[in-house]
Image (tube, rainbow, N blue to C red; front, top):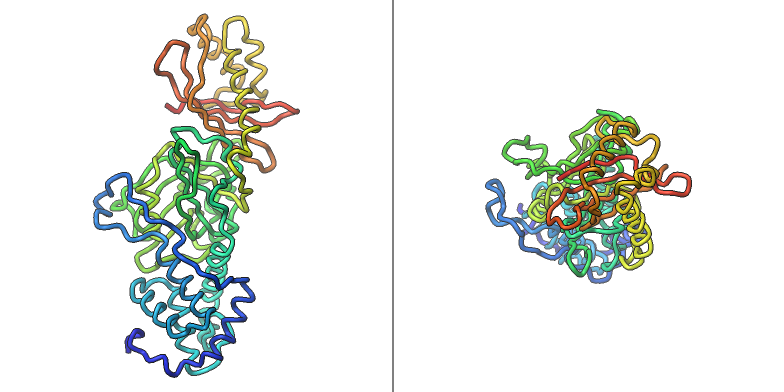
Length: 426
């Protein structure tokens, strides 16, 4: 019989509420009104051939699942069963929704002790999958219960330039991806989604360790979904792992993507990939049709510190002053002052400090008396066992309308910022 056609007359509300009360208590779930977590935004670009149909609503399935939870917590068991049945009908591969519907139906015949309360023989056979679904449920509800303030951003985004029209932050501890829009009014949170990371967790070091890297990266390309295996779902956005910092630390591997899910799975377990970040296909399509390649930063970290952008003003000004001092020293006769900004272990595309300084002096000769102007500066800070600032900016000789785009990696060394890498990216 179709779940939508089942009668709820036999549903023991007392037994069901006993189960869900324990569930809510364990998760700290508030039964206040919960709506859709994301607002529908019309894509800026026309979807590619594989996604030319009307895009499915991103974040909607999760919002509907949370509404099922809310209805149970409010003792509206008949409505909860109706909503859960409709959700499963619309998203038949949404395993967590199937699990909740199963519990609602099972409560008609016997007491339910917890989420996924299946017979012992079934629980033993699917113990790993059941544990993963319970963890997914906890992570989803925690994200709804404690969302980041709308007017705040991760502290790592010290300065987002005009070129950074969007930014992404992946919080691996919360299994959440946050999508930001950056305009004249500053960055604002557009949407947030449940994600899956590596089977072995995070902190990638070597190829094949099935861990998701931690660091500050950039989207490098947008892969054609027709060229991908079904495993990657509706598409993939590779990031530049290993970045400059990773390479200096001897990290290996590659092929770290933000991608979708197989056609047989709506979402994956919290730890289920070979190191990539996976999101539901409707969510990935929203991201693909929103962000830009090369200029979109992707933070992958844990438990971000969220701050108001205005609170980063002092840090932003301090480092911008350092950048300007570097630019002002880029003149004939000031080569010694300029080289003081570079670390002794500087390395750029195989050039050590001695070889790089020679090319830098040639550049100064070509500039002559012209000063250097820095425009559209972005600053992204990454702090682990070293404090690193990734600066990207347009460098223009005075009087010129065009120049080059430079990216530098600075590290805090002996009470001063020092450049450890410098390269031209455009």
